[in-house]
Image (cartoon, rainbow, N blue to C red; front, side, top):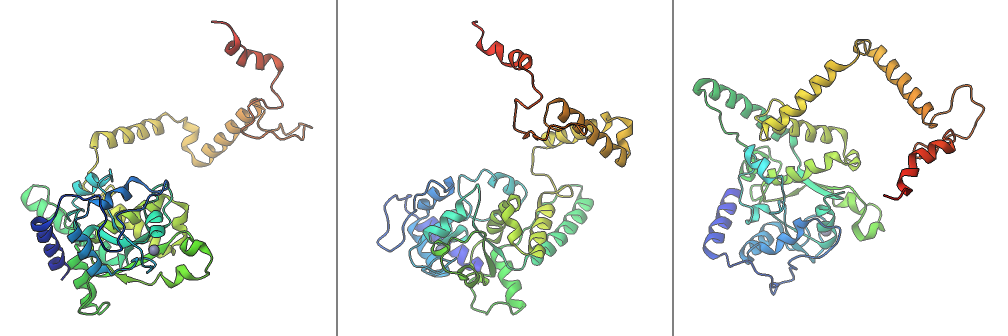
Length: 342
Ligand SMILES: [Zn+2]
């Protein structure tokens, strides 16, 4: 069904798509809101055609898909400015059209801002059944290996489409037969709804919800939070499933979409570094003892760590450049040249 929808949207976009418009439609949709905290991703939402916006509203509703308020932007999940897009395409994971409803979701200004806050996202969504995606990739890896062994040629990866995920969930009776898409989890990593004043609001809107779009787009956005301490808000099994999926898609066992010489550069550096270590450090216990001893020695010489026998109780802060053990002569030697006429 979702394929029909996507195909339908694609066909409409090809046939009817007007040139990108900066003007607002006559509906309540705002093209995009401005916020200094948003990434450049937000500004791309104005490039959806009016047809795609209508199709997205038909499939995902008129309200914010996240918090169900009424004033919404039709937002890109993957923005044209996303510099990772090429990597995901090369990995065979992105095969949807970026200007269609497959890449669109209605969000209110607050949810949009937190979704697009690239430096510290406060909102993400991703498929509710991550195990389906793990199993899919595991089976596809076996297929690729088998075919590559037979043909001697690399085999292109398959990634779950919206239609496949929906069909799986229908067969498992997780969604009804008229569902527009599989179930997705809504995750609030900050308490921002209504300014965080209503306790439990985020919990209310965290129930899984159908979404019609490309699941890989939402997974790409979910991976972005794995580098955030806020990812620990998510339950461990879900977080581990996201990490497992990232490893399957981009890890050592995966066909590398990255610049191979660049990856080899750091790997060979790591090997050289390991070989250079002093023999005593190859023993793990000795290594730790040696590191601690060296750290203590350096710290003491810089006045950052008190000598064990010292009676000076004024502990220096690590950021304190002119520590208690620095002499006037050392200060002159360090900083004098800065004041010399050149
Ligand atoms: Zn919202």
